[in-house]
Image (cartoon, rainbow, N blue to C red):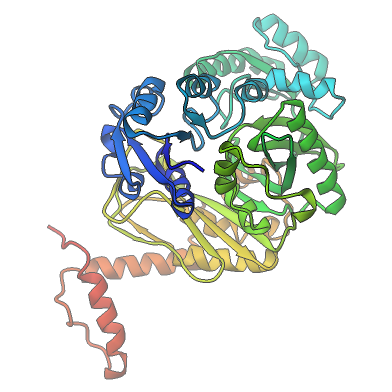
Length: 504
């Protein structure tokens, strides 16, 4: 096993990886840009190396600076987390050429499955189901128009090197095609340095379900159940759960075996995810493969009881897989909410700033993967993801009940977050029934259901509490007139108020 690992990332995923390393007795090295000097992942690591200014291209995306930090610190391996360089074959190849272990799949597998068109070609050639569309890049608009007419509208334009909703455009009719094509190419170039796009038939109201796979360098490959990822806003996942309310044992086995076949086609090792779309007839189609650890990996960990990051480390160190397919058993249900520094009432506008107070939920079945702390200032330069709230229950009903409780307990003051938005989602009848699809959130937002003017009872309670606390900050401790039997409440309230700075 490695003695020291550098984590080439920031925020909650960097802390998550470091925790797994610490449990395995591995020393960790954090990297940080100028604006991240006081970040939680820097404070948590055993040592830290500066890698440049705030812009990602000069720090977290700078391969030379990351490799230099690894060499200076004596790290034997690099874990890329997700995002930034996690799916960049050039980074993985540079690690290999420098003699540093890249904790991820082989470069060749990353190159094949990282290209949306190349992966579609491989899967189609193997006779596996793929969403109708092209398996090559489309360079001229005339060709895009011809293909769109052949497969029929609506269609999706997608960045070949893309992910995370970048370079993705839905086109409902021919008159919107040219504008969408040019916008998708420009966005793809800015996000990935590659303007290539391809086209797919748009499936009406599909489910987005993905299969987690895990493989070693000895040729063993297994699947770890599925994750329901249909709760998306503008093609970006915001909530995930496992198992999917739609998937039964037979469908799970078929999708899992297909995912393993796709992984073997690529010669895949380490953790990866094969994503599928499921139509209304419960037929599934290959969408893409993510050659990295997913943001939503905790729901799989809670349901199958396997620490994916520890397994990534063991596999990268050359150890054989410790699990066989028959060992994998799904127990209970888990749900994850991505907590962002965004204002749901203002079209989810980013809200960086000082976190004046932070109280994460606790108790049975609650997990919080966080990259922030009270008193820290959320920077503007990076993705506004603050934390992931994950709950587990013996079944989906209990998991939802715990999620409601956890969201009610969650307190963040000083910035706006998406917590109020999730409080409304978990009360929606379609979510409670598990009758969701990839357009559910956008549709509900357009109808004003999830972010309307009327506050939920829980939001009203929190607003009243915040108002009372704000009004009371100028009153001296102990000045609240309360009955003697409630003095313990007053003492607790005074202790809370005294933590807050007074208004000037």
